[in-house]
Image (cartoon, rainbow, N blue to C red; front, side, top):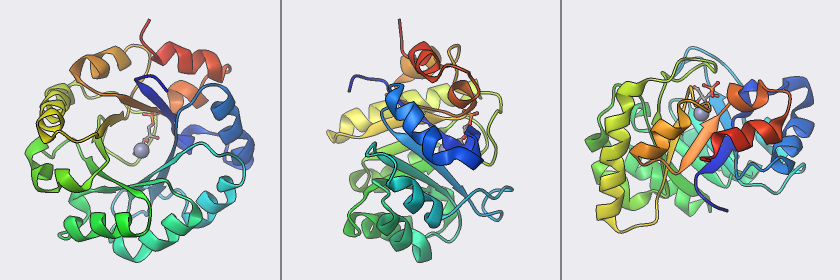
Length: 217
Ligand code: DX5
Ligand code: ZN
């Protein structure tokens, strides 16, 4: 696949038809499916758990990018790995033992990723860069789809791009929240190579056109 990768978030899909909704974006050119798991504790909303990830796994072979907005994370990592998550992303803010959790994700056979809330500086993840395959910058406060892109996060994306370059490792740099055809070029310019989009894909009638509109001309 060519960069940027596009990862539609099923948070904005029709929850009564999730299997079809996942297949539809895979056929429309999506690179990953982004699955937002919320616990009503780490974030003020509840979405779905490993049973839904497992049920969707039979419907497509596209990589599942599972974004855990839960705390604690450790008791649930095995369930998400067994459900078919290819990548498991946890928040640096979710607890004091991120280093151990990321190692556990790798041991379970999934790719580990780390997520930063808008209030968290880039340097907060400096000591776990060697453990992750994905870094995700939240460009809204996590919990809900359809919020406004925070352009205050652009310098942080650029700083993380520098940190990745210096690491010498192959790490994807994703952005999540308020990504649409207007904000996508800003995130790409700052250094992002994965665009996560909920409403800008599932809120549109033509998924292929919506995904194409996020890629640079
Ligand atoms: C927010 C989630 C996002 C959300 C994005 O907590 O992590 O993945 O689905 O939705 P949009 O693209 O509508 O801002
Ligand atoms: Zn997300």
